Image (cartoon, rainbow, N blue to C red):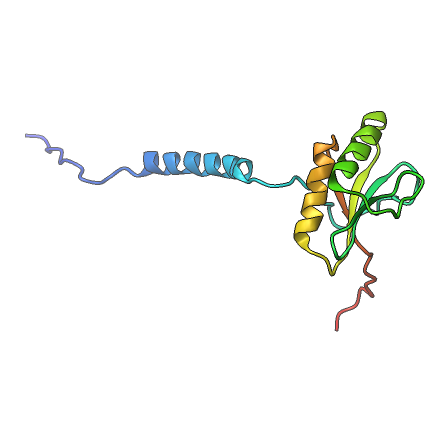
Length: 143
């Protein structure tokens, strides 16, 4: 009588590991698609500055008390209603679709006012809306 084979009672976990890796990949791919909100293109570090001082850029300024103004027209400092902002911005964006669009928000103001300004510009046809900030000087050394 030759040697009898015994039954192997171990669990083979390799298929379970394969399934877990596939699920992990699926969740990693779908998670960014599930977020809701305003699309913002964040610059890579170090960030390049955008020349918004020229006549090509469309800049919406949001003051601390929520007043809105566009840098276009005869009086760029004149406060505008949200409807006027959308109407003027839509006209300019349709004429110059490649012009950079940005929001300049007061640091003491409400974050909600800045977001509403971004949404107005997106509804007016802007595909990408940037945020303007003051450039911070760094000395590069460590303290």
